[in-house]
Amino acid sequence: MRARCTPLMILGILCLLAIPITASAGGFAVGPPSISVTIPAYGEGTTSIYITSDFDGELIVGVEDIPFRVEPETIQVSSTYVQKEVELTFYGDPSISEGTYSGKVTLLAYSGNNVAHGVKIKADVTQISQIHPGQADEGNGGNSFVDTIKDNYIAVILGVMVIVALAVGIGIGRMRRHET
Image (cartoon, rainbow, N blue to C red; front, side, top):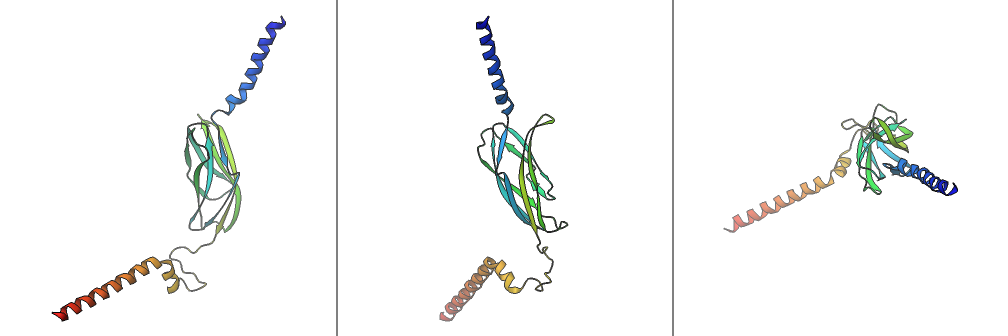
């Protein structure tokens, strides 16, 4: 009788050991465990996360206790992902006061209508004030001429080069006309 119990006990133990393996199939991991991003009120800010997955499917991205929109809203994952970099973009909202908002970014994998796996990442999103495009800054009377040139220095350099080339071309043309 003892000889018959041993194979049944071994089979039972193997079944119990297989349960965690079966339960973890189709999972994913996300790092780092926390992120921090700064966004202007009228702009956006990005940060990267890294995903390792052992299933092919889709993750739904959301936020908890953070009043800002984040994209992408869904991430397609593959079982071949090992530390796959994914960029998250947070969008500022001028109707929200500047400051740091702490919460979580959630990534959920569904199986049918049920959440199969979920990961939460701690997130600190800091919104800073920024002048809306077209709005004058009362502090210094708006953008100065020098600031405009600094912001558009490539266009200024190209413009100066075109003017110099035209002046040289006109000068050479006049010299040739006077020679004949």
